Length: 132
Image (cartoon, rainbow, N blue to C red):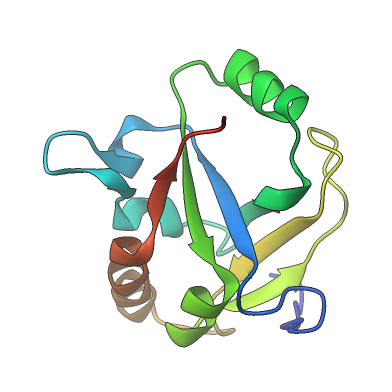
């Protein structure tokens, strides 16, 4: 994992970050249809790719829907992610969407069980986002 560094200036705590939930196990349509599951915040690379919601346009959301037709969008604030141990870090621009691309990263060397606990604490603070 690259040495990502938390960036509270570029991503202040109130910034909403959207994660494309491509897998239907990343949300709870039966239990809690309004939030993401903990699986949404666990990535094998330990880099949870996100975009800044306020920088996405209707065209971006249309592209997401066309590319990932069965996906949903999960949103958390940068502050909630930080409060649960993640760093909110700038990443290289995405080839997919021309918006701020951020990653939510656990601390380097975090044990898998601790990473799972982090995701379980963050998930209830997420919401499923519906673009207008």
